[in-house]
Length: 201
Image (tube, rainbow, N blue to C red; front, side, top):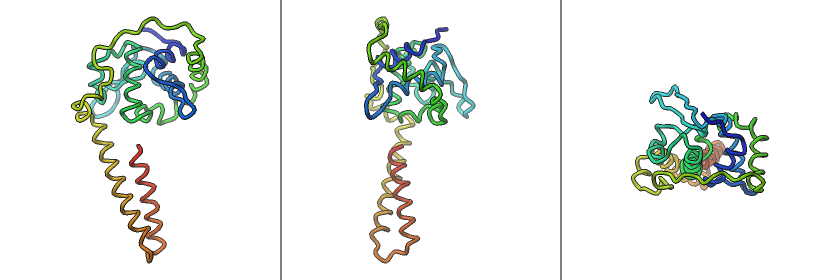
C-alpha cells in the first residue's frame, strides 16, 4: 500500500493533463477529489451497494463497470495510470459529477490542502517525479468508435441532449404564441430552463 502526499497527487494529476486556469481550477479539484475519494491510497478499493456490485479502484476510485474499457488498458494501482483514467473521465465522460465526493461536496474540506499542492506543482517548486510508465494501450480510450458506442454514458448524454432539444422547440413555440395565457408562458420558460440543464449535464 502506498499513500501519496498531497503534492504527489498533484504531480500525477498534472502529468496526466489536469491544469489550473482562469476559467477552471481542475488541477486543484483533482487533488481534492482524490483526497476525498481515497486519502491518496493507491491500493484502496471500495465495493458499492449498487445492483451491479461494482468496485471503485485506486486514488481516483475508477469504477470497474462504467470504465471497464479504461481498466483493460491501464493498471489502476499505478498512480500515473489512475490519474490518466481520471483525466479521460473528467474531459470526455461527464466531468466532475462522475465522482460522488464532488456531487455531495465532500471534496470541499480538502480544498485548502489541494490549493497548496497545486500551486507548488504549477510553480515548479517541488522535486519532479521519476519518469512515468507508459500505459498498455491507447492513451485516449475514447478515440475508438467502438468504445464510444459501448460506453453507457454516451447513450445517456445523447438521450439528455435530444430531450433538451425537444423542450427548447416546445418553449420557442409557446413563447412565440402572442395570445398565450400567462401560465402557458411560464411553463414555456420553465421548459427552456430544464432544456438547458438537460443539454449540458
